[in-house]
Image (cartoon, rainbow over all chains, first blue to last red; front, side, top):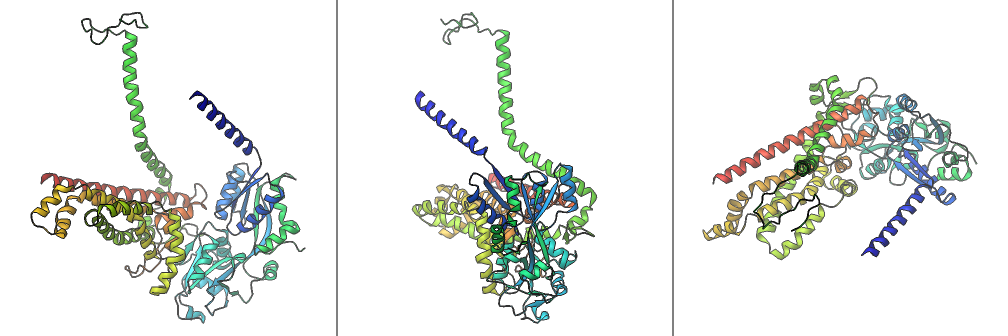
Length: 276
Length: 325
């Protein structure tokens, strides 16, 4: 009995010791936008091979949540698909955090519809009218006689913020607009609902939905990078000040400037800022 | 005779010719031990009550500045929920309250008949062997995580509702009601079945011996006898439905509107729980939006407490009526 107790105590202590040893190794916590999420995931994958002793966790819950986490020092890098708001900067500085934004890619917010929908050209004013509830049927836009189901991202999203700024011009959306919480969910809604219209990041325009031309401009890499596409935006990674040179955080936020980083950004469906 | 540590000679229990005298220290130790022990146990028991009370207090404190700033009437009767708007933020919770009510009542409309009938079937009609197999299986349904139900609702149920019934949108009040009813079913069936079985053989045998058929026994004797348990089961199911967050966030569409013809369940609604879950991540701590969400949470708490009190009253009345017989 006594030997059993001693043995089990020794095993428990060994496990705790090894656990503490593990905890002393480097961890990198990334939190924020669901749009920038795939880029952070791809970088984390690559880093797992290059620096195997670093554990990187990527959380995707919205740009606003990422900013709040950086302000509270709960994460090392906050990925955001919009710039930090004035209030977030003030809160951060008040808590001794000095957010520094790194632009890792360019993105366009694309308006998507179901593939069976014949409408393929819309103006910003028409999209605004749809979300304001002034236009409620596709036949008013030259499409079939179907009710329009506008789908929006929730207010924690940077994609919502960009859409609100460029298209809605900060006017309130109609009451019947549906809300989803992530890009993939908006994609799933449009893919399965014939009368739906939604807006997603450029990387989420995949098989199963159709991206419409906005104000006559096709959303492609070149039109987004040049700003010709009306709803283009930079994607950010915010850190607390510029991270120390050579640290894992600095390597992560500068990875997009390397050839491998550019390839990963392109694979994720975004427009890289470099031209290798 | 044993020698105690204090040096006095202790008597054994059988030897009661001399009185037991306690020294002042022993007396004090006994007194403290008794009362401190009781106090500790009381505190441990009160922890659960304290937890509920402190949650209520915390939410009320966070919501209070908002409730003094915005008029309560506007909060409860306006339908515009635009807390993040730049020029004029609106905090009207009526659409949210209506959404919660729609989804809960819809869930109960589906779950209560099915649940009670299933409980009656399991307790009265089917053999014990089948019942012992089926009941645990039903209870497993309660263990499925709500996110799994949410995925099912969005990816499978929504397109099916669109294609089959020609609804414009598949994520609507009907979708959320159906999934919530499936979530509330195991609770209702389990508790109702327990209380119907607890009625006992005597009542049933008495009814049969008077010549009643099985249906008459079940409807006129057994269910009225298990009245209080069935009400408790329904109330538990309703609590599950009103408090469910993930499923309604994914399945109800989250449009903050009251459906236009009020009976049209095929329109999207938004519940209070989904609003809190969806908006909480973004809000800056201490802002109006943050406090408005706490006010919505307070409203939700008050509604559940009221429902609880109503059910307690009904239960007490049912017990009193049964007791008088």
